[in-house]
Structures are given as C-alpha cells and as structure tokens.
Image (cartoon, rainbow, N blue to C red):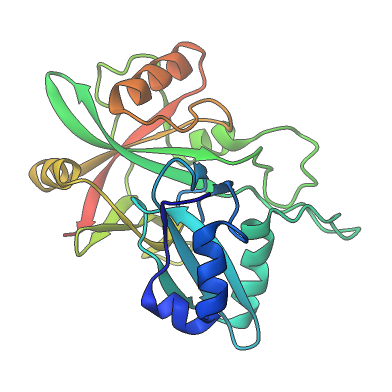
Length: 259
C-alpha cells in the first residue's frame, strides 16, 4: 500500500475525490515508476512521491515524480506537446513509422556537489535513459552520445581531481533558486536549450550556495547505464570515478545564467 503519495488539492480537483482516494490507498498507483522530472526510477512504497497531472486541451495524463524533484501539481501544456510527452511518460515503445528515425532518449539530469581541488563544486550529471542516435540517422550506428558532445567541445575526463575546461557559449540557467535548462549556442546567435526541465528542478541549499559562490557549474555526461541513480553524493562520486576510469565520461565548466 503506497503511503507516501502526495496528491495536491489542485490535482484532486481535476481528477475527483474518488480517483484521488484510489491513488492514496494504492488501487491505481504504481509501485515503481520513472520520475517525470529527472527520469530516474522511483518507488512510491519506499519514498515520497508526487502525483503530477499534465492537462492539454483534450487530453490529461497522470504521471509520478520524486517529491524531492517537484511537488504534486497540475501542469498545463499544449495538446501536441502532451501527446508527444505521453510516449515518454507511459513508456510507449510503439514501432517507429517507416522512413522516420527513432525518437531520441530522454536526458536525465542530477545535481550534486563534487569535491575537486579541496573545494565542493556544484555539478550536474547528465545521463540519457537510452542510446542516443546521431540526428538524421536511423540509429544503427550505435550510441553516439559521447561523440556528439566531444564534437560540441566537451572534453574527455579521466581525473575528477582536476577542473574541466570552460565551454564557450554554453551556460546553466538557474532562476528563483531552481534549475531550468542547460543552454548552448544557437544557430543564429544567442542561446537555445540543449536540455530543459519539464518543470524547474529543485536543488539543495548547499548546491545553490556553492553555485552562487563560484558562478560556475561543472557538467559531467556519460552514456546510458554508466552512472545510474545514486542516493548519496559519495556514491555519485564513486560512479563518476568509475565512468571516468572506463573512458565513459566527458565534462565542461559552464557559467551560471540567472540567480
């Protein structure tokens, strides 16, 4: 019986008392799920879980998220965006129509503090939920995630005791104390989102204090399955060290955009 499920008043008003009560007693809530915010596994029997209702013009989808990522809420989205998101939320693996490249995997992003040069540095760890194909291909060339990042200027990282180099034109957008996006240079000048949160992600007070001090974020990236969900920062560091030793980690330093 899930006893750690949060159903906000806004969500209850949309789905009705009966459905909300069924969720709370476990009749219609999953035991395990993929967090709709950070895209890593969760278990509403073991950890506080938020119900998130995505509402379009004609469609509504109920999803679940770690309560530490986002609170229970109603999210209004455009109908076409919702239909596209439904495949990600529900895990639909329908065959790709002939002549179309497969959809790229979702990028999962985790924030944490990493000890480098005797100082705790604010970091983001990016790991896709599956192999990343090169845009415009059918995906038969294998996972191209690291190669694509190397072409963008990320550098291979074999030693986490040294700060990664700066990546010109990229930045990390933090607004009102929450993580919104990782920005990259746009094709026509300015910046565009390389990764953007479905809903702004909460970060710890320690992470926010560190990034306000340094005005720089370290962004590490590894292929799907290299890091995994780590409940503690020491375990995250161990996973990063292992990925680096195996030649599966790239990194860059990026300035903070916002506050």
